[in-house]
Length: 101
Image (cartoon, rainbow, N blue to C red; front, side):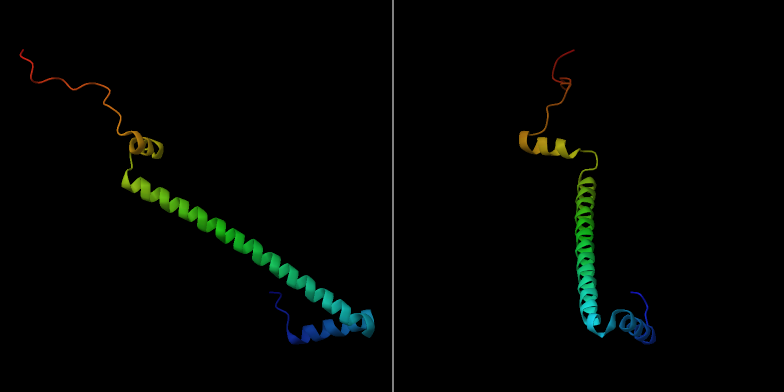
């Protein structure tokens, strides 16, 4: 994450020991560790939430594409209306062909 080597960690530990002293260094290390764990857990929660949202959006797009491919000219609400109420009657009645001229 930070690309810190062993030598750099040793230098940080020596500086922390000189600045904080041997009495306060263990408590500071525990506090730093707890903050790092909390930050990682928070980041994992945010990451998993984003992944769930992306998966849900991808599923919505997939369903929409499937419906569009199945019946590209029909609107979803029209398809639902037809499924519930049956198809709408034609607007113009067909011309009668059995009438004499």
